[in-house]
Image (cartoon, rainbow, N blue to C red; front, side, top):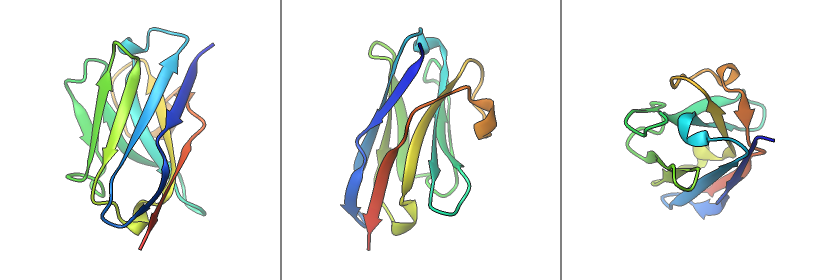
Length: 123
């Protein structure tokens, strides 16, 4: 059974940092592209960042570019999202996702999802 498990969320003050992790099990996820999405209360799920299976290509939403960094360790089947200079508007539940082919920004294109981890940024 495919499983994605996020961790690392929490409460942080504006300007602070957090690192999210997403561990995969059940398949050879080193061959999968991975993405991070987030959903704030009353809003739709939105794309944050994505990385190809090799890690050679990344993509970021404009709202996080320059502040967030996505990376992966295929030996550990884990993807990370380093979040710096956090803002209150970054508050959301963050989800990791996986798909077999190229990275895209559409949430509907990702077949596998984690349960989410809450990130709260106080002002």
